[in-house]
Length: 418
Ligand SMILES: *Cc1c(COP(=O)(O)O)cnc(C)c1O
Image (cartoon, rainbow, N blue to C red; front, side):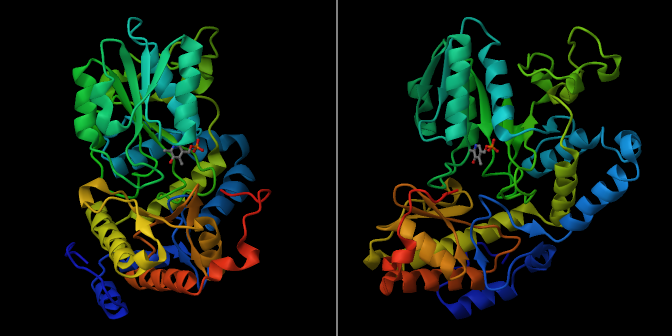
Protein backbone atom coordinates (compact mmCIF):
# COMPACT_ATOMS: atom_id res chain seq x y z
CA UNK A 1 0.00 0.00 0.00
CA UNK A 2 3.02 2.24 -0.41
CA UNK A 3 1.49 3.67 -3.57
CA UNK A 4 -0.76 6.32 -2.09
CA UNK A 5 -2.59 6.82 -5.35
CA UNK A 6 -4.17 3.35 -5.32
CA UNK A 7 -7.91 3.59 -5.57
CA UNK A 8 -10.23 0.88 -4.36
CA UNK A 9 -13.45 0.45 -6.34
CA UNK A 10 -14.43 -3.16 -5.65
CA UNK A 11 -14.05 -5.97 -3.14
CA UNK A 12 -11.36 -7.44 -5.40
CA UNK A 13 -9.38 -4.20 -5.43
CA UNK A 14 -9.75 -4.02 -1.64
CA UNK A 15 -8.24 -7.50 -1.32
CA UNK A 16 -5.43 -6.57 -3.71
CA UNK A 17 -4.65 -3.44 -1.69
CA UNK A 18 -4.61 -5.52 1.50
CA UNK A 19 -2.13 -7.93 -0.09
CA UNK A 20 0.25 -4.97 -0.54
CA UNK A 21 -0.39 -3.52 2.93
CA UNK A 22 2.95 -2.88 4.65
CA UNK A 23 1.11 -2.38 7.98
CA UNK A 24 -0.77 -5.70 7.90
CA UNK A 25 1.56 -7.09 10.60
CA UNK A 26 0.14 -4.61 13.14
CA UNK A 27 -3.41 -6.03 13.15
CA UNK A 28 -2.47 -8.88 15.49
CA UNK A 29 -1.25 -6.36 18.05
CA UNK A 30 -4.92 -5.58 18.80
CA UNK A 31 -7.79 -7.50 20.35
CA UNK A 32 -11.08 -6.83 18.55
CA UNK A 33 -14.35 -8.73 18.78
CA UNK A 34 -15.06 -11.11 15.89
CA UNK A 35 -17.37 -9.81 13.19
CA UNK A 36 -16.95 -6.16 14.09
CA UNK A 37 -15.61 -3.45 11.79
CA UNK A 38 -14.53 -0.84 14.29
CA UNK A 39 -14.73 2.65 12.83
CA UNK A 40 -14.77 4.48 16.15
CA UNK A 41 -11.07 4.38 17.01
CA UNK A 42 -11.12 8.18 16.78
CA UNK A 43 -13.27 8.15 19.92
CA UNK A 44 -11.92 5.16 21.86
CA UNK A 45 -9.06 3.20 20.29
CA UNK A 46 -9.08 -0.60 20.29
CA UNK A 47 -7.27 -2.53 23.02
CA UNK A 48 -3.69 -3.61 22.28
CA UNK A 49 -3.19 -7.24 23.32
CA UNK A 50 -0.19 -6.30 25.46
CA UNK A 51 -2.25 -4.15 27.86
CA UNK A 52 -3.96 -6.68 30.19
CA UNK A 53 -0.72 -8.36 31.27
CA UNK A 54 1.05 -5.02 31.75
CA UNK A 55 -1.76 -3.73 33.96
CA UNK A 56 -1.88 -7.00 35.90
CA UNK A 57 1.88 -6.74 36.46
CA UNK A 58 1.62 -3.14 37.67
CA UNK A 59 -1.16 -4.12 40.08
CA UNK A 60 0.03 -7.43 41.48
CA UNK A 61 3.79 -7.03 41.35
CA UNK A 62 4.63 -3.34 41.42
CA UNK A 63 1.84 -2.29 43.76
CA UNK A 64 1.00 -5.58 45.49
CA UNK A 65 4.56 -6.66 46.23
CA UNK A 66 6.66 -3.54 45.75
CA UNK A 67 4.32 -1.22 47.64
CA UNK A 68 5.79 2.24 48.11
CA UNK A 69 9.25 1.18 46.96
CA UNK A 70 7.88 1.02 43.41
CA UNK A 71 7.98 4.81 43.13
CA UNK A 72 11.70 4.31 42.60
CA UNK A 73 12.10 0.58 42.04
CA UNK A 74 9.50 0.30 39.28
CA UNK A 75 10.18 3.70 37.78
CA UNK A 76 6.83 5.20 38.75
CA UNK A 77 8.29 8.64 39.49
CA UNK A 78 9.90 8.88 36.06
CA UNK A 79 6.92 7.42 34.19
CA UNK A 80 5.09 10.69 33.25
CA UNK A 81 8.22 12.16 31.66
CA UNK A 82 9.24 8.90 30.00
CA UNK A 83 5.77 8.57 28.49
CA UNK A 84 5.94 12.24 27.50
CA UNK A 85 9.04 11.55 25.42
CA UNK A 86 7.42 8.49 23.82
CA UNK A 87 4.34 10.56 22.95
CA UNK A 88 6.48 13.44 21.73
CA UNK A 89 8.25 11.14 19.28
CA UNK A 90 4.86 10.33 17.72
CA UNK A 91 4.03 14.01 17.08
CA UNK A 92 7.44 15.32 16.10
CA UNK A 93 8.64 16.79 19.40
CA UNK A 94 12.24 16.32 20.53
CA UNK A 95 12.69 14.82 24.03
CA UNK A 96 12.21 16.94 27.15
CA UNK A 97 9.20 18.89 25.90
CA UNK A 98 6.17 16.68 26.55
CA UNK A 99 4.71 15.67 29.92
CA UNK A 100 2.05 13.01 30.32
CA UNK A 101 -0.75 13.34 32.87
CA UNK A 102 -4.24 14.49 33.76
CA UNK A 103 -6.91 15.05 31.09
CA UNK A 104 -6.88 17.01 27.86
CA UNK A 105 -9.23 19.49 29.52
CA UNK A 106 -6.84 20.14 32.41
CA UNK A 107 -3.84 20.43 30.07
CA UNK A 108 -5.74 22.87 27.84
CA UNK A 109 -6.55 24.98 30.87
CA UNK A 110 -2.88 24.98 31.81
CA UNK A 111 -1.72 26.04 28.36
CA UNK A 112 -4.41 28.62 27.57
CA UNK A 113 -4.31 30.27 31.00
CA UNK A 114 -0.50 30.43 30.99
CA UNK A 115 -0.42 32.38 27.73
CA UNK A 116 -3.52 34.40 28.56
CA UNK A 117 -1.76 35.92 31.54
CA UNK A 118 1.72 36.13 30.04
CA UNK A 119 1.35 39.56 28.42
CA UNK A 120 -0.92 41.86 30.47
CA UNK A 121 -1.54 44.32 27.60
CA UNK A 122 -3.13 41.61 25.50
CA UNK A 123 -6.67 40.90 26.59
CA UNK A 124 -8.26 38.69 23.92
CA UNK A 125 -8.44 34.91 23.65
CA UNK A 126 -9.36 33.34 20.30
CA UNK A 127 -10.92 29.92 19.78
CA UNK A 128 -12.87 28.15 17.03
CA UNK A 129 -16.66 28.34 17.32
CA UNK A 130 -16.76 24.77 15.97
CA UNK A 131 -14.08 23.56 18.39
CA UNK A 132 -14.70 20.54 20.60
CA UNK A 133 -16.88 21.65 23.54
CA UNK A 134 -14.19 21.25 26.20
CA UNK A 135 -11.86 23.54 24.21
CA UNK A 136 -14.52 26.22 24.05
CA UNK A 137 -15.51 25.85 27.69
CA UNK A 138 -11.89 26.17 28.84
CA UNK A 139 -11.44 29.31 26.74
CA UNK A 140 -14.65 30.76 28.20
CA UNK A 141 -13.55 29.97 31.73
CA UNK A 142 -10.07 31.45 31.33
CA UNK A 143 -11.59 34.60 29.82
CA UNK A 144 -13.97 34.89 32.78
CA UNK A 145 -11.25 34.19 35.30
CA UNK A 146 -8.89 36.82 33.94
CA UNK A 147 -11.49 39.37 32.79
CA UNK A 148 -10.58 38.88 29.13
CA UNK A 149 -12.56 38.92 25.89
CA UNK A 150 -13.24 35.69 23.97
CA UNK A 151 -13.55 35.73 20.17
CA UNK A 152 -14.62 32.76 18.05
CA UNK A 153 -13.43 32.30 14.48
CA UNK A 154 -12.84 29.44 12.06
CA UNK A 155 -9.07 28.72 11.85
CA UNK A 156 -8.57 29.76 8.19
CA UNK A 157 -10.12 33.14 9.02
CA UNK A 158 -7.83 33.82 11.97
CA UNK A 159 -6.21 36.88 10.39
CA UNK A 160 -9.56 38.71 10.42
CA UNK A 161 -9.63 38.80 14.22
CA UNK A 162 -5.95 39.06 15.14
CA UNK A 163 -4.72 42.29 16.63
CA UNK A 164 -2.40 43.92 19.16
CA UNK A 165 -4.69 42.72 21.89
CA UNK A 166 -4.64 39.00 20.96
CA UNK A 167 -2.97 37.06 23.76
CA UNK A 168 -3.58 33.46 22.78
CA UNK A 169 -5.21 31.41 20.05
CA UNK A 170 -6.54 27.94 20.94
CA UNK A 171 -7.39 25.73 17.97
CA UNK A 172 -7.70 22.03 17.20
CA UNK A 173 -5.66 20.80 14.23
CA UNK A 174 -8.53 18.62 12.97
CA UNK A 175 -12.21 19.56 13.18
CA UNK A 176 -13.66 16.71 15.23
CA UNK A 177 -16.99 16.88 13.39
CA UNK A 178 -15.99 17.24 9.73
CA UNK A 179 -12.51 15.72 9.85
CA UNK A 180 -11.00 18.79 8.18
CA UNK A 181 -7.26 19.21 8.82
CA UNK A 182 -6.11 22.82 9.06
CA UNK A 183 -2.84 24.27 7.80
CA UNK A 184 -1.22 24.41 11.22
CA UNK A 185 2.04 25.95 9.95
CA UNK A 186 0.40 28.88 8.17
CA UNK A 187 -2.03 29.51 11.03
CA UNK A 188 0.79 29.40 13.59
CA UNK A 189 2.78 31.90 11.51
CA UNK A 190 -0.22 34.23 11.31
CA UNK A 191 -0.69 34.14 15.08
CA UNK A 192 3.00 34.82 15.68
CA UNK A 193 3.07 37.66 13.15
CA UNK A 194 0.47 39.39 15.33
CA UNK A 195 2.54 38.75 18.45
CA UNK A 196 0.07 36.18 19.79
CA UNK A 197 0.76 32.73 21.22
CA UNK A 198 -0.91 29.60 19.86
CA UNK A 199 -1.98 26.33 21.49
CA UNK A 200 -2.81 23.37 19.25
CA UNK A 201 -5.11 20.55 20.37
CA UNK A 202 -3.82 17.41 18.65
CA UNK A 203 -6.39 14.88 19.90
CA UNK A 204 -7.24 13.86 16.31
CA UNK A 205 -3.65 14.02 15.08
CA UNK A 206 -1.59 11.94 17.52
CA UNK A 207 -1.38 8.42 16.09
CA UNK A 208 -3.50 9.38 13.07
CA UNK A 209 -0.91 11.12 10.90
CA UNK A 210 2.71 12.26 11.02
CA UNK A 211 3.14 15.68 12.58
CA UNK A 212 6.18 17.95 12.98
CA UNK A 213 5.33 19.78 16.18
CA UNK A 214 8.77 21.35 16.67
CA UNK A 215 8.78 22.61 13.07
CA UNK A 216 5.25 24.01 13.27
CA UNK A 217 6.50 26.26 16.04
CA UNK A 218 3.50 26.00 18.35
CA UNK A 219 3.87 27.63 21.75
CA UNK A 220 2.07 24.69 23.34
CA UNK A 221 0.08 21.65 22.31
CA UNK A 222 -2.10 19.13 24.09
CA UNK A 223 -3.66 15.81 23.19
CA UNK A 224 -5.40 12.77 24.58
CA UNK A 225 -4.12 9.20 24.36
CA UNK A 226 -7.33 7.15 24.22
CA UNK A 227 -8.25 7.84 20.58
CA UNK A 228 -5.67 6.88 17.91
CA UNK A 229 -3.13 6.06 20.64
CA UNK A 230 -5.27 3.29 22.17
CA UNK A 231 -4.39 4.02 25.82
CA UNK A 232 -7.81 2.95 27.13
CA UNK A 233 -10.82 4.83 28.49
CA UNK A 234 -9.71 7.99 30.27
CA UNK A 235 -6.01 7.30 29.72
CA UNK A 236 -3.81 10.28 30.66
CA UNK A 237 -3.36 13.22 28.30
CA UNK A 238 -0.20 15.18 27.51
CA UNK A 239 1.07 18.72 27.19
CA UNK A 240 3.88 19.99 24.96
CA UNK A 241 5.80 23.06 26.04
CA UNK A 242 8.76 23.68 23.74
CA UNK A 243 12.11 24.47 25.34
CA UNK A 244 11.89 28.15 24.39
CA UNK A 245 8.70 28.73 26.44
CA UNK A 246 9.45 26.47 29.40
CA UNK A 247 11.07 29.11 31.56
CA UNK A 248 8.45 31.78 30.79
CA UNK A 249 5.20 29.95 31.37
CA UNK A 250 3.54 30.45 34.71
CA UNK A 251 1.24 27.41 34.88
CA UNK A 252 -1.95 27.98 36.84
CA UNK A 253 -2.42 24.56 38.39
CA UNK A 254 0.66 24.13 40.51
CA UNK A 255 1.11 20.82 42.27
CA UNK A 256 3.87 19.41 44.39
CA UNK A 257 5.07 17.03 41.66
CA UNK A 258 6.01 20.02 39.50
CA UNK A 259 7.98 21.87 42.18
CA UNK A 260 11.75 22.35 41.96
CA UNK A 261 12.42 19.94 44.77
CA UNK A 262 9.26 17.93 45.19
CA UNK A 263 10.60 16.11 48.22
CA UNK A 264 11.66 19.19 50.13
CA UNK A 265 7.95 19.88 50.70
CA UNK A 266 8.62 23.61 50.78
CA UNK A 267 6.00 26.22 51.69
CA UNK A 268 6.31 28.27 48.49
CA UNK A 269 6.13 26.94 44.96
CA UNK A 270 9.21 27.20 42.81
CA UNK A 271 8.74 25.47 39.43
CA UNK A 272 11.03 22.63 38.46
CA UNK A 273 13.34 23.37 35.53
CA UNK A 274 12.39 22.15 32.08
CA UNK A 275 9.28 20.17 31.25
CA UNK A 276 9.08 18.77 34.80
CA UNK A 277 7.19 21.93 35.79
CA UNK A 278 4.26 20.57 33.76
CA UNK A 279 3.74 17.81 36.31
CA UNK A 280 0.84 18.51 38.66
CA UNK A 281 -0.18 16.05 41.37
CA UNK A 282 0.41 12.35 41.89
CA UNK A 283 0.17 10.66 38.48
CA UNK A 284 -2.32 7.93 37.64
CA UNK A 285 0.18 5.08 37.55
CA UNK A 286 -2.15 2.22 36.64
CA UNK A 287 -3.52 4.15 33.66
CA UNK A 288 0.03 5.03 32.66
CA UNK A 289 1.03 1.36 32.83
CA UNK A 290 -1.73 0.61 30.33
CA UNK A 291 -0.65 3.48 28.08
CA UNK A 292 3.01 2.48 28.24
CA UNK A 293 2.12 -1.01 26.99
CA UNK A 294 -0.32 0.38 24.40
CA UNK A 295 2.40 2.54 22.85
CA UNK A 296 4.39 -0.60 21.98
CA UNK A 297 2.06 -1.08 18.99
CA UNK A 298 4.04 1.73 17.30
CA UNK A 299 7.30 -0.24 17.40
CA UNK A 300 8.54 -0.62 13.83
CA UNK A 301 5.66 1.46 12.46
CA UNK A 302 6.44 4.37 10.14
CA UNK A 303 3.81 7.12 10.47
CA UNK A 304 4.24 7.88 6.77
CA UNK A 305 2.84 4.39 6.09
CA UNK A 306 0.01 5.06 8.54
CA UNK A 307 -0.85 8.23 6.65
CA UNK A 308 -0.65 6.54 3.24
CA UNK A 309 -3.00 3.78 4.36
CA UNK A 310 -5.34 6.22 6.08
CA UNK A 311 -5.70 8.12 2.82
CA UNK A 312 -6.44 4.91 0.89
CA UNK A 313 -9.15 4.01 3.42
CA UNK A 314 -10.73 7.45 3.52
CA UNK A 315 -10.54 7.79 -0.28
CA UNK A 316 -12.32 4.46 -0.54
CA UNK A 317 -15.15 5.76 1.64
CA UNK A 318 -15.41 9.10 -0.17
CA UNK A 319 -15.43 7.39 -3.57
CA UNK A 320 -17.99 4.82 -2.46
CA UNK A 321 -20.20 7.53 -0.98
CA UNK A 322 -20.24 9.63 -4.14
CA UNK A 323 -20.68 6.62 -6.46
CA UNK A 324 -23.24 4.59 -4.55
CA UNK A 325 -24.73 6.50 -1.62
CA UNK A 326 -25.59 9.90 -3.09
CA UNK A 327 -28.94 8.52 -4.32
CA UNK A 328 -29.81 7.89 -0.66
CA UNK A 329 -29.22 11.52 0.26
CA UNK A 330 -25.68 10.96 1.59
CA UNK A 331 -23.19 13.81 1.25
CA UNK A 332 -19.58 13.80 2.47
CA UNK A 333 -18.62 16.84 4.53
CA UNK A 334 -14.94 15.82 4.78
CA UNK A 335 -12.67 17.53 2.22
CA UNK A 336 -11.46 15.48 -0.75
CA UNK A 337 -8.00 17.07 -0.82
CA UNK A 338 -5.58 14.88 1.08
CA UNK A 339 -3.81 17.79 2.77
CA UNK A 340 -7.13 18.99 4.20
CA UNK A 341 -8.19 15.66 5.69
CA UNK A 342 -7.52 13.95 9.03
CA UNK A 343 -8.21 10.22 9.46
CA UNK A 344 -12.00 10.32 9.50
CA UNK A 345 -14.88 10.74 7.09
CA UNK A 346 -18.14 12.33 8.12
CA UNK A 347 -21.21 11.61 6.03
CA UNK A 348 -24.26 13.85 6.26
CA UNK A 349 -27.54 12.00 5.76
CA UNK A 350 -31.16 11.99 6.79
CA UNK A 351 -31.85 9.84 9.88
CA UNK A 352 -28.13 9.66 10.69
CA UNK A 353 -28.84 8.66 14.28
CA UNK A 354 -30.96 5.65 13.33
CA UNK A 355 -28.52 4.69 10.57
CA UNK A 356 -25.65 4.71 13.09
CA UNK A 357 -27.58 2.35 15.36
CA UNK A 358 -28.64 0.06 12.51
CA UNK A 359 -25.00 -0.18 11.45
CA UNK A 360 -23.87 -1.03 14.99
CA UNK A 361 -26.45 -3.82 15.12
CA UNK A 362 -24.76 -5.22 12.00
CA UNK A 363 -21.25 -5.02 13.47
CA UNK A 364 -20.20 -1.74 11.87
CA UNK A 365 -19.35 0.66 14.68
CA UNK A 366 -19.15 4.36 13.89
CA UNK A 367 -20.69 7.26 15.75
CA UNK A 368 -23.32 9.91 15.39
CA UNK A 369 -22.70 13.64 15.70
CA UNK A 370 -25.77 15.80 15.94
CA UNK A 371 -27.72 16.77 14.03
CA UNK A 372 -27.10 14.70 10.90
CA UNK A 373 -23.61 13.22 10.71
CA UNK A 374 -22.43 9.63 10.66
CA UNK A 375 -18.78 9.90 11.70
CA UNK A 376 -16.36 7.14 10.70
CA UNK A 377 -12.80 7.03 12.05
CA UNK A 378 -9.97 5.05 10.46
CA UNK A 379 -7.17 3.53 12.51
CA UNK A 380 -4.80 2.06 9.90
CA UNK A 381 -3.06 -0.28 12.35
CA UNK A 382 -6.10 -2.50 12.75
CA UNK A 383 -8.33 -1.88 9.72
CA UNK A 384 -8.01 -3.39 6.27
CA UNK A 385 -9.47 -2.21 2.98
CA UNK A 386 -11.63 -5.33 3.01
CA UNK A 387 -13.06 -4.35 6.42
CA UNK A 388 -13.87 -0.87 5.18
CA UNK A 389 -15.30 -2.09 1.88
CA UNK A 390 -17.58 -4.44 3.80
CA UNK A 391 -18.65 -1.62 6.12
CA UNK A 392 -19.62 0.50 3.14
CA UNK A 393 -21.67 -2.31 1.62
CA UNK A 394 -23.47 -2.73 4.94
CA UNK A 395 -24.17 1.00 4.99
CA UNK A 396 -25.52 0.85 1.44
CA UNK A 397 -27.77 -2.04 2.43
CA UNK A 398 -29.07 -0.23 5.53
CA UNK A 399 -29.97 2.76 3.37
CA UNK A 400 -31.41 0.78 0.44
CA UNK A 401 -33.60 -1.44 2.64
CA UNK A 402 -34.49 1.39 5.03
CA UNK A 403 -33.38 -0.85 7.91
CA UNK A 404 -33.11 2.38 9.92
CA UNK A 405 -36.93 2.50 10.06
CA UNK A 406 -36.89 -0.31 12.64
CA UNK A 407 -38.46 1.17 15.81
CA UNK A 408 -35.59 -0.36 17.81
CA UNK A 409 -33.32 2.38 16.46
CA UNK A 410 -35.55 5.36 17.16
CA UNK A 411 -33.83 7.93 19.24
CA UNK A 412 -34.42 7.62 22.95
CA UNK A 413 -33.66 10.90 24.62
CA UNK A 414 -32.76 9.07 27.81
CA UNK A 415 -30.15 6.85 26.14
CA UNK A 416 -26.59 7.97 26.48
CA UNK A 417 -24.92 9.01 23.23
CA UNK A 418 -21.19 9.19 23.61
C1 LIG B 1 -11.45 14.06 22.47
C2 LIG B 1 -11.15 15.53 22.55
C3 LIG B 1 -11.02 16.17 23.79
C4 LIG B 1 -11.27 15.40 25.05
O1 LIG B 1 -10.96 16.06 26.23
P1 LIG B 1 -10.86 15.17 27.56
O2 LIG B 1 -10.47 16.10 28.63
O3 LIG B 1 -9.86 14.10 27.27
O4 LIG B 1 -12.21 14.55 27.77
C5 LIG B 1 -10.67 17.51 23.80
N1 LIG B 1 -10.48 18.19 22.65
C6 LIG B 1 -10.61 17.60 21.44
C7 LIG B 1 -10.39 18.39 20.19
C8 LIG B 1 -10.98 16.26 21.36
O5 LIG B 1 -11.13 15.68 20.17
